[in-house]
Image (cartoon, rainbow, N blue to C red):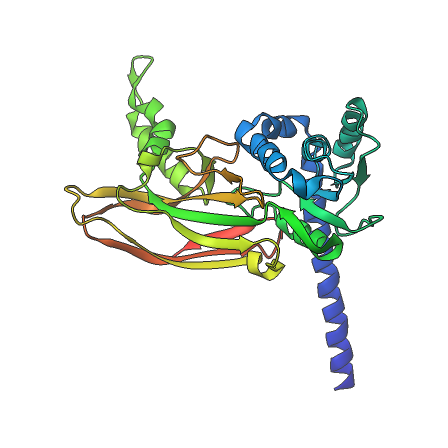
Length: 340
């Protein structure tokens, strides 16, 4: 029994070591991807995103003025500079895990004369040490379908370790929405070219293959219009996180049952291709950043999850099932999304 116990202990240690190695590898891959300047350009050019943070800081200036602020994953430093200039923060600790991006943020902060009030810190949030606790934790952590890339976990770690009692989270609430949709537009964009005249020849036999390729993708990010949601069906809020109190475990496993009722008064059937997901975040100053199809387009777009095959839903029918969104066991930055 002693040998068996010792062997089990060694196996456990090896498994833990392997898990730590996988986490470090996943983190390194993600951090290095943010060395690309074009990624930051896409985010900076996203006016609804960046302006929502600006408006939230201006509306909540009393939360920032004369206070210490922590910006988790500061990128090029735009939120840190807005907190310092518009929010009049006393000090902003701008933490960035990507070395190249942290160096850029430092140059930008210096060029804008904010070095005395913004300290750029290169390092992984979970490992760095701050000279004081902070009054506000601010971060643009949201990924596709809200939780992709798992940056929220670092924000929650920062909250637990560095936010003073009574301090504020910017944003303070995050919600994930789900709605069945007709995605013929996306299929047409993929297959439509083959339906037309291709240099005087008929290539339409490729349409089915092109559509199948799109449907085979587990998830895709795109944009669609509100009229692509099934008519008369209201989106369902499948997750609602209070970021001042929620735990990592809560965001790593999300399950929601759904029942979408098609209105009986409708005169025709509707084609269901799959589910669309998007999110909202809300700031303590009451400003909202909304990424749904009825709001101005953002770089996140919406997440589209195609069903295996389209189906016709008749008036008065219900579409019932469950959504499971869980952190990937091999790469903790990714999530597995499934529907039943």
